[in-house]
Amino acid sequence: MDENQSGPAPRSLNEDELLKLLGGQQFGVLATVKRSGHPAMSNVLYRWDPAERIIRVSTTADRLKARQVGNNPRVALHVHGPDVWSFAVAEGDAEVSDAAEELLAFAGDQPDAAAFLEQQARERRVIIKIKVSRLYGTALDLP
Image (cartoon, rainbow, N blue to C red; front, side, top):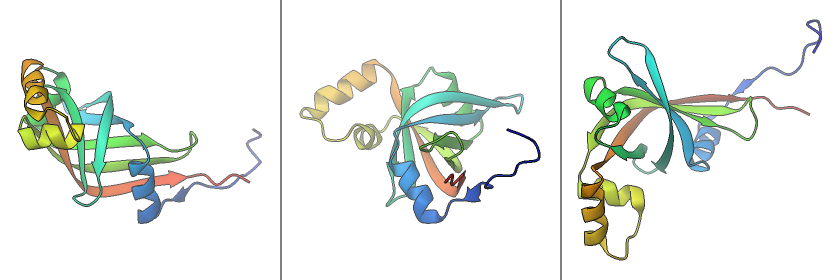
């Protein structure tokens, strides 16, 4: 593209658009904070609870992202939109939990909850629970 040509500028997404984008995806990039202060990013599968404004990410207790959340709860989740220029970011404080209700909230209905929870315990599964305090993102409306 020629530097002198100008196209449409990205626009900020409104709250409804952000919520729709966040709820319409299940994969994102989780940014945690390393001890050095640098960001660490991981591709993750997530679940969005719009009523509680909570994002849940399943991982194992020994994964770096779980340990980093324990050291610094400030995180962000980046979610791609329908094109490379569209995205949403959810920021908030996170905690790591192995509570049965959190594991079940992530997984949804299980035919045998007890067996499911036993498997989760064997795998040392935990949930990174993010309380979303800020949402932002943009879109580029191309003709």
